[in-house]
Amino acid sequence: MKNEFYREYKERVMPALREEHGYKNEHQIPKLEKVVINTSVGSQSDVKQALEEAKAELALITGQKPAETRAKKSISNFKLRKEQAIGAKVTLRGERMYEFMERLIKAALPRIRDFRGVSPKGFDGRGNYTLGVSDQSIFPEVELDKIKRNIGFDVTIVTTARTNEEAKSLLSEMGMPFSDRPKKPVAQAA
Image (cartoon, rainbow, N blue to C red; front, side, top):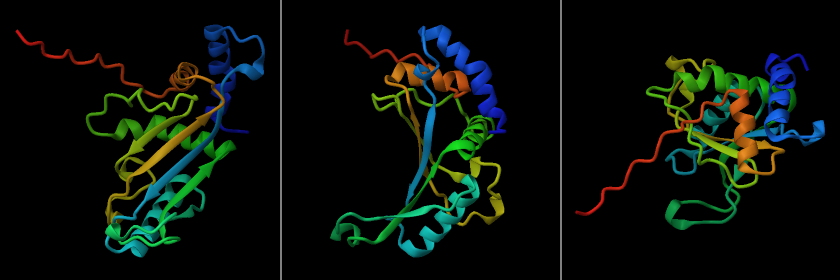
């Protein structure tokens, strides 16, 4: 791989994690496995048009053609039929994954207005992290003039880490800006 972000992982992040957690073997050091970007347009009034726009935006942001996701069952209250296309997802691995992570961490997240870091509560207990992005315009590839509707999506970062602490230290070393805001004190009754 020629990616600069991957080279930084190999040269700086791996030795730092080995020292921090005391790994004896190089294969014990957590690494990124894949990144899954998922969006849903099931609640839109014109689902087909919204889905095409969402797929075009995902393809532009990730550089890879998205796959359609379909409804698993019918729900009449939501006007949803079984097997109806309601979303799109992209799974990134290898060089494209590292390129996307570099753009997410260094370009997209800092463009969020009043950004104070991503929530450290997005871990699933097995070393994977999910981040919700409410607007696609934070990515530099997206032209603001051509946006017809805001498309929110989830970014799931799958790692080989076994615990949340290992995954958090991996992502922190890679530059993910976690907010370590102190919890607000609960008002006590007098």
